[in-house]
Length: 308
Image (cartoon, rainbow, N blue to C red; front, top):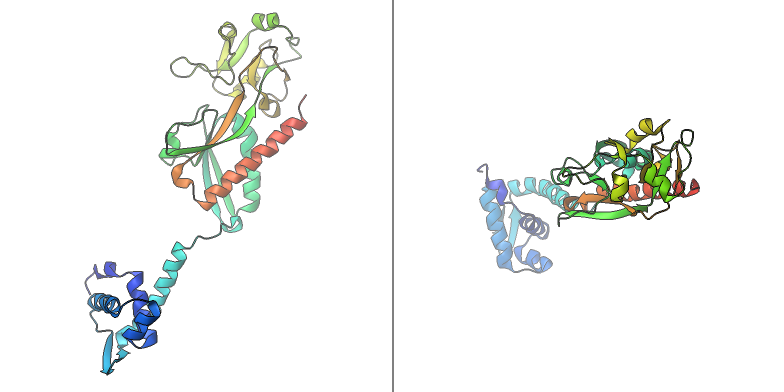
């Protein structure tokens, strides 16, 4: 048999071969399978060419008998067909048997609040779980497209047919300050006279809509810019700086600071879970996405219980 002949094998022909072997007749096999004798004969001809063996020989009349080669092939073909059947059967995902390794692109706020909850949940159920983070205020979609990340957490809904997303939550901005170093700002005049800390300007000069003051007037009062929310605390502590930032920071990096709702309108903060289309139907990925949604619910519930 030539090295490449095995590529001519197919499950249909092997199934016909085994039926002929069991029935002891081409006609009986054709009747059982609901196909013509010609189809059976063509399949056997293909297999004879592949294995270079007649496989069946006539003993008289319509009766046939399998060759020694055919008998030796039967059990192995059954195993191959069984594996092919298993390959095409959707397996129920069982976390306790799964070894999961996920990389998530996210900002430091979600890393500190949501991902620890996600890790606790998944690690408690999965056989093995490792979690890696890539920190960015606006994680690049290329992380998903290139396979460098399995999930992204981003305040921006994606553009592109290959990226899928689901909104995880809506948060409201608050004003954070060190109550031991300055009084609570109450009026619009207090905010106009204050100095602020915000996130770094993005490429092109656009400021982050999550942390920087929304009005042009207050934007000009930003005295310090840092790359992450977690970097704000060290600058705010003992200073008169204000930070207009996501309310969820009360549970994380800015938990030691006082906070209030500002006396003017600020845009709501959205957070989305993003993944690549190729992972849409993956049972393990689906399960982890569901666990992430549950983790967000748990964190948000904690935020409501701590709300002042």
